[in-house]
Image 1: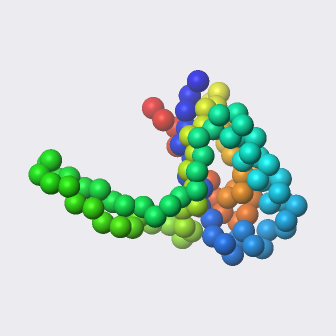
Image 2 (image 1 turned 60 degrees about the vertical axis):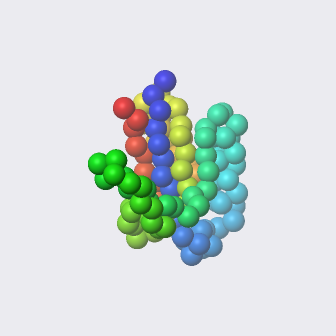
Length: 107
């Protein structure tokens, strides 16, 4: 079955202004996906890793990606196709609480 990486973006302000019943349903969607075997987690503090030409590892705290909203979490999901993946994530907290979820097919 095809796999997809999802990246959820959202901030506390958007989450806070979302009505509680909508958030409750979204968190139930997350729990359902996890119960189906989705690997999901909240984003921690990133570290950039570089090793140009294998000459030495250099690290720097912070993200390389830039977005208007902070990265909130990631998931690895299996779905029949892209449409199915979109359907699966369309009700998660980042999608309904004024954030966004990117869906990346793994090839």
